Image 1 (cartoon, one colour):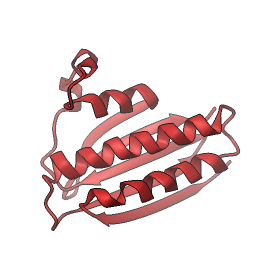
Image 2: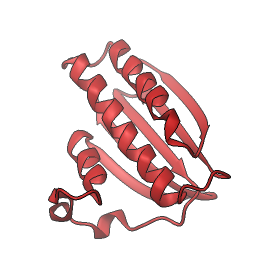
Image 3: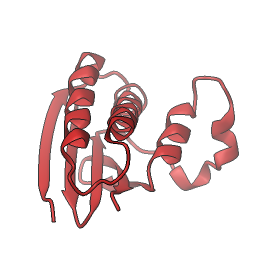
Length: 139
């Protein structure tokens, strides 16, 4: 059983998207328990990280330079678990149906992509903000 946990805190700025995306890609490339296409998984992990962090920066943290983003990436029990923490006031993920994310405008596309690529997605209140949890089953 693989075990891994990475905990990253970055300022509330989009310039860190590439760095965190590459870390996600590198993790995907090293997953021995994943039997699928690791290149495709790496691309998907980079994409969901980029979408989730962008949403946290722009919407939850409202581009406030005083706030930060925390990203935790871990592997436990054949599951890749990604958590993106924000310091915003949250929104109701369950109130948004999948049909609303099929629009081609900028709003909602990120959540639709995340839901499409990950096996489980949840958004809950956590201490001083909210956490978006995304899980990919590796087997």
